[in-house]
Amino acid sequence: MQKGKKASWMEIFQGLGKTFMLPVALLAFMGLFLGIGSSFSSSSTIDVFPFLGASWLQVVFRFMSTIGGFAFSYLPVMFAMAIPLGLARKEKGVAAFSGFVGYVVMHLSINFYLQETNQLATADQLREAGQEIVFGIQTLSMGVLGGIIAGLIVYKLHTRFYHFQLPDSFAFFSGARFVPIITSLTLAVVG
Image 1 (cartoon, rainbow, N blue to C red):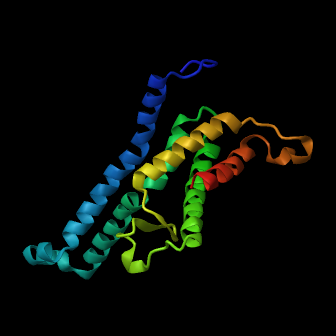
Image 2: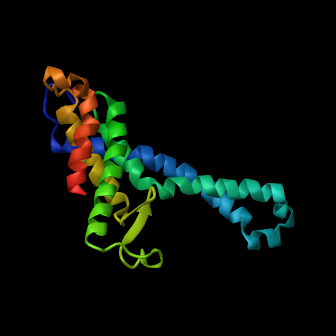
């Protein structure tokens, strides 16, 4: 994109597609870890290859499964961070940080609503109620779409406010520091 020109829709979608590559690349690599760890720690594999039953090997394989599962469990937050990181032209670190802040605040807001309306499901009925636990917060199950929505909102807020100046008495909160603040406020309402 050329400096000073507004991005066309095609450029935005191309940039968005490129931002998806960061979490997807990690997902592919962690999928290998998860697959190797899970398959070599299964009882049927150990029955065929008894040497794989060695306790130290099983610890390694279970560790690989645990680490490999990370990318699948936290894929929505990775999108919430990767989209503003990849699309932002300046202050990319602030954009990614704001993506995380916005994603968590959105889920806190949803949790608050569910509590206030007595809609929190019990632990054994989470799935049936369309709810899940995200970072210890009981919330609606939005999956990757929730991360993408949060990421796009944060990107727009970042683009609009990373250079925003407040009056001198609040100057400390100006510029890049204002982005996570406005993100918190906006995604609290969106949630």
